[in-house]
Amino acid sequence: MKILVPVDGSQNSLKALKYAINLAKGLTAKSSIVVINVHDDSSFNYINQFVTYEDIKNFLIENSQKEMKPAQKLLAKSDITHSFIIEIGNISETILSIADKEKVGLIVIGSKGRSELSDILLGSVAHRITHKAKQPVLVVK
Image (cartoon, rainbow, N blue to C red; front, side, top):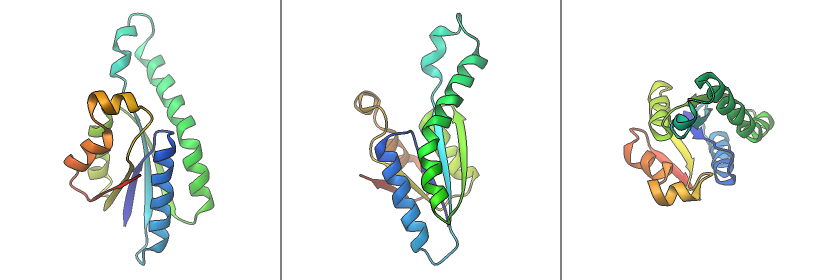
């Protein structure tokens, strides 16, 4: 089974990844984990007049690479087949799109991400994923 785990550098997303690793180890079928990190670039629209989109994109990719490092370390210690995806766009829509594209059997996501304020104002990514995903979703607290 292919398991998709969104990570954002938060402790909750790393807990979800640890859970997915243990789950994959316990499955009898060969399993793999796809780790995705998505940054929403819409909040950078107002600075387009000062920096190029390419600079913004490079900045976001750099942040994603930093946020992926703990996940890379965790997976390097396991014998689970894995891959990493970095995307820029609407976070929930991108996660759902990648879940379909990668034909994952399960999405494992942390209950809260890096921004508790956005959870209050916009509704959490986990909430949107659980309601819109075609795949089963496991939310880890």
